Length: 173
Image (cartoon, rainbow, N blue to C red; front, side):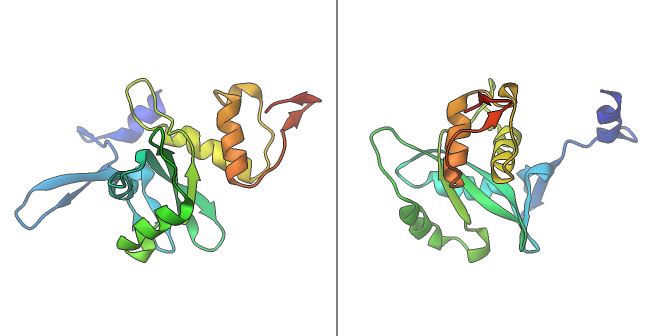
């Protein structure tokens, strides 16, 4: 894709979209990717920082934090949490655990579901974000828009959307 290549190459530099922070000793740490930053109420939230915090919870197997549209704040941090096998956990437990975080960094929505990862182990944030946005906006999906019916059912249930989705008389979920 020539346009995408032109967007990341300029004056001999490759702009990866990685964001870094320098500490007082001059060490540089990668913080997150620019496209993953959540802007909520004017605050920049770095999903990796929230994910790292949540992974310290002894019942959490995996977690992905994504931004979802919000009319008041612009976006809200949403934690998709996969619980360890044999464990149970409630939204209240997670919210209590997150009280250690500054208020603006706390996830506003908790969803218990499998964390989607690609073949290289990276979190499928764009796919998860698309499914959740479509579910929130009641958009009808074609079967090739999602990889399994179960994933969409989880998303719909998380947003309190009852029942199957239909297109042309065919049940999609």
